[in-house]
Image (tube, rainbow, N blue to C red; front, side, top):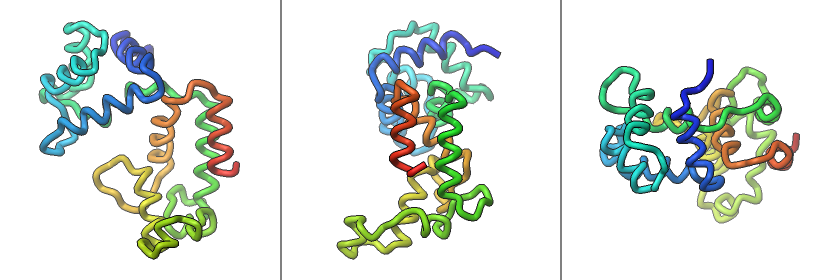
Length: 189
């Protein structure tokens, strides 16, 4: 099934701004979400597009909003929206992400926990550990929570959450070679 052209155009307009185009509009959406509902009305959505000078027409903005407002509630979940406008991951990148996840998931149960990290992630040189500001467990928890995009952070990371995190990172990396280098250096794979 092919992607709707207005989604492709919107993504292109954001990616023309460089590696942080999608991230910047995401930050803006979070800022204008005063009630922290993680949703946007059409007016908020249109304001984001206008304020960021994204080159799509009013009709295209309406169509884009309609595509993501599947239940016709008049609101869209902006995190889901941002995930959907990221460029799709190719199999090469997915396989690197899987290798990194498997490196962390020492028990092999498909979920990374603090226990899994103990043999993989060293905190003994972390500045906040050295200063006594944080314990090893707190640093591990903060690390795991960085992969959890939901508001309910549970201290566990599934492959889906890990993949979603790296899909966001991948959107800002043009070449597979650079992505490969970054993943191998970060995760020692």
